[in-house]
Amino acid sequence: MTALSDARGCLTPAGLALVQHATPGAVPAELAQHVAACARCQGRLLKADLGGPRQAGGHAPIPGLSGPERVARLWRPIVLLVAILALALTALVLLAAFAAD
Image (cartoon, rainbow, N blue to C red; front, side, top):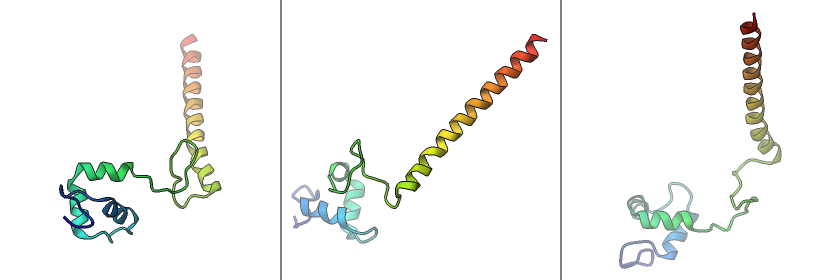
């Protein structure tokens, strides 16, 4: 038992904090191996509140995306959906026109 792991071998709160706040690749190998194999510690890490900024709905914002980039990510799927619906409607109108002849 160390300061980073308890009697079960799972991470202590200090160990969880170390893993959460470490840069990628900087977590000690023994902790990374344990987290990779321990569903309990994985769940605790996923449930942990990192205390970062939250959007409406409780989700953390996508890092690196500012306002205009978020809008750009939203309008593209909407335009694609409208285009698909327009093509489907055009196909139905043409099918009905040819079926009437």
